[in-house]
Length: 535
Image (cartoon, rainbow, N blue to C red):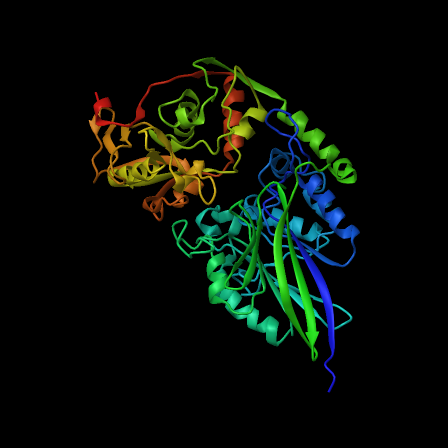
């Protein structure tokens, strides 16, 4: 009997963690940048010029993260969401909800899902009422005339409840993505007769792709490696969440890709298929990253975004107050984390004033936060405070405070020259500057020359040693209060008060009410590299 054979090539294009960045423009200082959805749109169009079978998937976190996204969700809801409009215009085939899709509440997300010309897929985000996938079908099937069938299954990191405000996810259950995949992959293979199964998982890889060694604490936030090893039948794993650039790798035979963030890369997977005796087989699969550098924006996408971008620019440029006293500008992020700084002291002071408690902790979220100049605009607020956090007051023990400070102290290490630098734990697999807290209302010293877990050499409150068995009320953002950032000492502690207003609004209102804020510096804490520096 003569063997029947035919061939086919399929290309999967992936974006992830766009975070509301469309135009190649810095909201901080107006300079041009070389990334954004408008540039990615050009790369997508170039791939489509060659014809062939191409599917375009967004892997999550597209609706939050930029001033534009915040303005659309929280300031002016009178116009359609421009991110969704652009994705519709680019003709996405499907999207997966990321953890940040829930930041503005369930109603907002459901409105944007309804406005999308493509399905949103997640097998493990389910309704507590019905037990069914929240967004309808958890997968999508493509079938071609030659009979080949391809399935894309969506998954979302199940760690969302550890970060998100309870009001935003009420009625939603996040089940383990590995368990969900074990249920749905056999169904797709056996019942849906899928020849190719692609998993688009808004989560990352918690282990080294080659050695399998843990690259981060195994909390369940990033289960990509487990999906590849524990769930048979996956051909391709589209990942995200960690903002890494990953391509050209396979894990247990699964082709893996992750395209960075903010439109820095377009992920591309090329599948070569052959049909032998009526059975389609994947004979080759390769992943690569297409860089956004040296690529022009798609002009129709720029024009589509222009009205919304103009509106957010006008809002960002509004002056809301001024600064007197100490210089609140951040010129050296590392130095700002080594000793008390007027900007961080002010953030903590505001948190204490709004909450009515005497102890506070907060972080600089990244190394791009500029602090404040003498004039303060909305742009300054939202660039320095990029996440839609709220405030929570927890009742914790003195031991909890010490443990939290020891966790923050892990941020530093000494190099071979005895110089202080950021620990690799906070840089890889992605920068985690937001997980280093600075405190107000207590006095403390970190000695980085000591072993981890024993670096807090002074810890006092109002001039007296903090008692490890005593209870203290501390204000912090809701992410940290949930234990986020590997702060388990806070998880499950008694909540004394919640202020469910975004910090951007709280900070802006605080300044507007006063007109002028006075920057102060009390030097209540510092980091040292030798016990000789102790007084």
